[in-house]
Image (cartoon, rainbow, N blue to C red):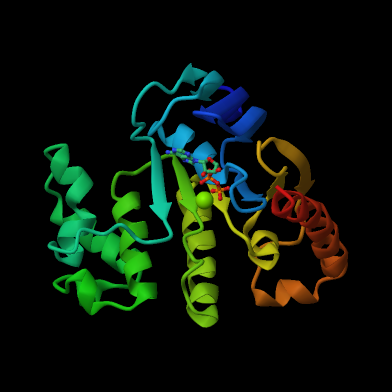
Length: 253
Ligand SMILES: Nc1ncnc2c1ncn2[C@@H]1O[C@H](COP(=O)(O)OP(=O)(O)O)[C@@H](O)[C@H]1O
Ligand SMILES: [Mg+2]
């Protein structure tokens, strides 16, 4: 098996006259944690949707393990900013939804996931009874229940308060690492990118393409203290300067 699990090759995606992505090429290595940053509207969500198989490129190819992604891809699980939970189902039934759709009713596995993600006391609650951080835990567990090889995370922590966010960043890192998942994660926070990523990819203003990539070799395991590491601010400044140009370009239209 090749080391490349996900690949976008010369991908262009247009919506009518709007070119969201322009000949974007990106290879993701198995087990890698990639963080995508870029101005609003530069095509980040569009790229994740292509990898999830929710939509198809206008030109170019998206591949999983060397094979074109042609429909919704169960091996790529998505986690959204707005949780997208089923509000009429309990936490346990939300988490069991994917497996149930495939005819699997494995209560033991749901219990394991509830425990993994620290929500075992909330199994019978409904989403409306939960805080944002708890909802995002449920959403993550629901995606993990399908045992995807790739986690696609579209600004999953953007709506959370800073402390909840810090806790969930740590938990996501731990889960991705212990479960051997590959992760493609979008954020507007450079600190979050430096905390989570093996590699940070900056996209250009729309139409999006890869502008720069930075290998993030800050030592692991990382905690918030990573910000005290030598070279942290230099990395942060370099990424910010790269992103800032694109944010300004996108504001000028
Ligand atoms: N389904 C769609 N129909 C029409 N335009 C879309 C659609 N999805 C995205 N776009 C447009 O494509 C561009 C990129 O959007 P998006 O990928 O959501 O950006 P980002 O996630 O980087 O903020 C934007 O101009 C957006 O309006
Ligand atoms: Mg988006």
